Each structure stands twice: as structure tokens, then as C-alpha cells.
Length: 164
Image (cartoon, rainbow, N blue to C red):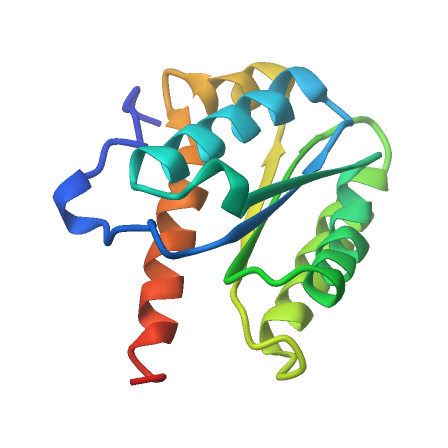
């Protein structure tokens, strides 16, 4: 894999987030990584105009709990999008596969569920080792939290096109 910062983007191609609200659900497992993802997402949202009072952050214990945390946030808060941030590092057991698959399927179901009608942004790092995770949480490959925030803004803007 090439050493490239995948979080480089053209800010002029990102709509204003000044009238948007966001929820961020972050796993505290592998917090060195996930809290860096949170920082990237939060800073990117505010950089593009989101007001701090329109960004709600909730913490859950692990990545598997991102699904319930995202669902609960959608039920209890009025937000335009929810960003789910977590990190699972491969170990020597199948646990990695079950957590990754369960979280992926759960977040996909939330996106497909017409009950909430908001985008749920997939920010789960699934890496072979901790260095790969750190490289994607502000390291040589950028910050996936930044990428998730840009995606959230663009998806809210996309949804707004259908409300006019």
C-alpha cells in the first residue's frame, strides 16, 4: 500500500454544515485510536460550519455497542446524521470477525431502516494491527474521523435535496 494521506479533500467541495446537527457515537475500546477519530470528526464538522451545540457526542464501551448507541441516539435526539466511530484490531481468535461483521451489519440495517430517515456513517476501523489503526487515526493515512465527518455533511446535503 502506498504511503498516502487519504483524508486530503477539497474543502470547497463540502457544503456548509452551519444549519446541520450531528451525533457522534464513539467506542472507548482502543481509545488512543477512537478518541483521535473523534477529534478529527469534531474538528472537521466545526471547520465546515457546524455549531458546537449541534454536535452531540456519546460514548459506548466497544465497537459492537456502536449499533445500539447509534439507534438510541437516533431515537432520543434530533440530528441530521450519526457518525459511528470505532476500532477493532485483529487478534488470534475469531472475535475480530464477529465484532466486525455484527457492527457492519447493524449499521447497514440502521441505514436501510426507514424509521430514522437519517444517514448513519460507518467509521469502524478494522485493522490487522495497532499501527495500521494509528496510521488511519491521524497518522500517515490521514484521519478516518475527518473522512466520516465530510461524508456526514455531504449525505445530509444529499438528503436535503429531496425535501425541497
